[in-house]
Length: 219
Image (cartoon, rainbow, N blue to C red; front, top):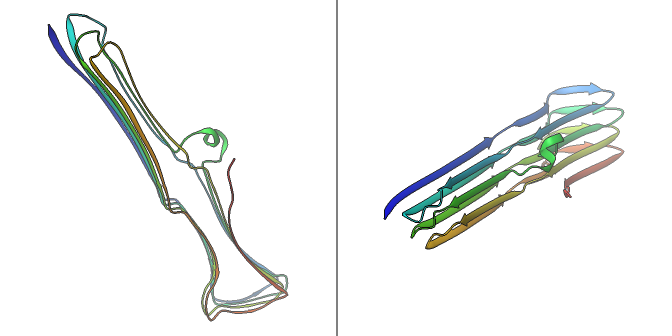
C-alpha cells in the first residue's frame, strides 16, 4: 500500500493598541470643563486549517491540520485633570472603553480557530487541533491628579468599560483512519482595568463630588 502525508495549517494573529487620551492641565477659569476620551475598538483573529484526502483503500493517508488564532489587546481610554481649574457649572472627567460592540462586530468572536482532517479509508492517522487565545489588557481611566486644584459646581470623575470578549476553538476528524484525534483549546486571559481616582493632595471645592468606575455587563 502507498502512504501519503497531507498537512494544512493556518495562523491568525491580531494585536491592537488603540489609545484615546484627553488632558487638561494649567491655570484656567471657565464656565465648565468637560474632558472626555472614548475608545470604540473592534478586533478579531480567525484561522481555519483543513486537510482532506479522497478515500482510497490502497492508500494509507496521514492527515494533519491545525488552526491557531491569537488576539492581544492593549486598548486604552485615558482622561487626566491637573493644575488649577475654576468653574461655575462643574468639571467632568469621563473615559469610555467599548470593544467589539459596533455593528457587525457585535456578534463576532475576538478569536476563532477551526481545524478539520478528513482521512482515507486505509491505515492512516488523522489529527486535527485548534487553539484560540485572547489576552486583553484594556484600560479605562479617569483621574484628577495629585496636586490638582478644582473649584466650582459639580465635579464628576467617571470611568466605564463595556467590552465583549469571546473565543471559540473546534477540531474535527472524519474518515476511516486507524487513529483519529480532534482536539481544541480556548482561553481568555482578561486583565482589563477600570479606574476612577482622585490623587493624594488634590484639592476640590464643589457642590458635589462623584467618583465612579463601572465595568458593564454585555449580554
